[in-house]
Image 1 (spheres, rainbow, N blue to C red):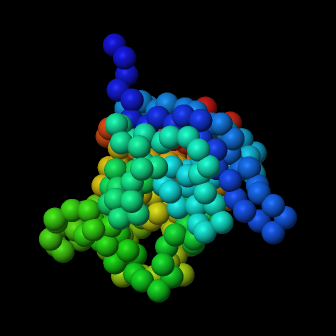
Image 2 (cartoon, rainbow, N blue to C red):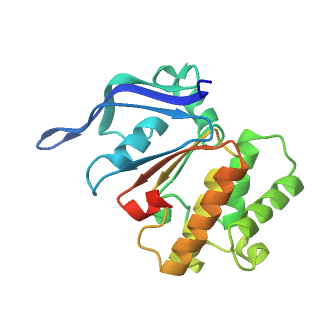
Length: 222
């Protein structure tokens, strides 16, 4: 039986404009991700792994653009969608967990508010239901005193705790595709192990398909 294809990329070229000219960050990348599959992409820093994730999410910034190619989420070409249509998909159908949580978490909002906002945008859950789902997600990933943490701001948490929060945010709605970009890099061994264990458990218990971006062969081996 042919596996159900969730994500299909063909002939992707992503470029950035810089003061010294055009940087060809990705050239002619093609890949296919099936339902519940974990597809690992390994490469050194600067090889284009993160750019691939940002291209799929369509959050390249003002200087970046996709020159050609296609990115299909099931039967929908993401490159044909409007900005509003992409915003309705991000966080719900496709999500990305980044290496540096400080670039994603809002330093002035509480952890609870930031996670509940994702739930509010994409579901019809009540505040109470969203609050309980947020608490459950933080507990599952091993956040100590999760109810208290929900009222705290990112600056009050350790780097490891913030990384756990970001992973909880990226998986809370069980997206069809999760892009995990160096999610355990620069963390202590214990936190790395906790995040890896939660990550494996989450994708084994759900239908989430995962694109795992890393420069660590050990992460792929796990």
